[in-house]
Image (cartoon, rainbow, N blue to C red):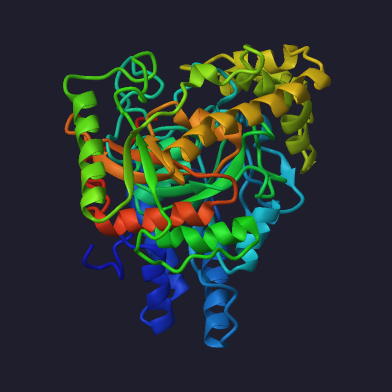
Length: 503
């Protein structure tokens, strides 16, 4: 690392911006450093589906450097690179396709950037590349390993470097959720920031397993035009970074409003309720534990609770949250029923309409394309598209789904609010490896992740998820900042132990 101008594994966006302001660094140098890191280590991790053309990146960085010299700064992160999940549309002129991980969309052309992308560019950020994801954000087949797509292949964790044989979907070598590529890109030092999207856990779990800070804003407050979603009721885009302070300007861009965030580190009007990790965890079907792993994660969780109390925090532990089995409408399961209906009738077709040119224009077209191009589109080890078929076969009436949506949103908020109000807390915390994120998604409440520890078993990172009431992004960020300044620094992966992925 001695020849580098900064260490891409540890540098935060705020640190880079400080050096840009002082003149000790320019954006061209930042781009070159990250490209060198990508060349050195992406072959072992497969975080990207595409990179912007290198000459175009250098030209954009040089233009932003010239604007800086002229005093024409666009925003606090002027000249900083960022990576996008490849379910977020970028105009074809940027030189990257928008595939959602599907061969059906490799040749599709986008007429314009998604509004959130254009807002990032207008604020002076540089779109470095498009990161791999679970194909169609995980809805193609229930068997898919997170971070796998037919077009992008399998992304691996920089902390583990492999996926163990017969691994469960969220086992200890699984890289996380559908926003795996953007999370790995930040953790591996390929970029200081990334944007993912989340239905339930799609940002939080990869952020957890890459020791990142992340936030999913209140559902409905981020413009999701041009962003592939599973459901209008659950989905939002959000940023991932190595530090809380890095998240604030990007969250402001996504929300289109200024956040009241001063970086204060006091606990005034702030209280946090931690659930019992012995109750809130992943079952063996999702995460097969090895000797001592569950106990180690609980021990670290409770140690953090103690440290926060010792630091003067208003901490309630354990708090009780109603079980996810109570998240029903008139006693019936609604969560996936809504998702399948939305995908058939709203989200997939609306997303495909945003392409200027595309070989597929509907859910039925995608299924047909996959069947006609099986070698590419339905390859080993996940040659199925059963979830897409479930969407297509959905015969529920819109009136019923609208009833379920209203009922599920109200029920989820009722369950969470009962804990907020009874316990007198404004944040609920739980292991990110738990079902509490389903509550958050159904409620549409903002959620976040903070790093917690790494497992002795294989070095994989794990975290704590946070939920606050609607519109309370500032409350989450305040606590995250206190947490970050109270506890040890996030662990950095050892990329030297990784081997290139066999092709």
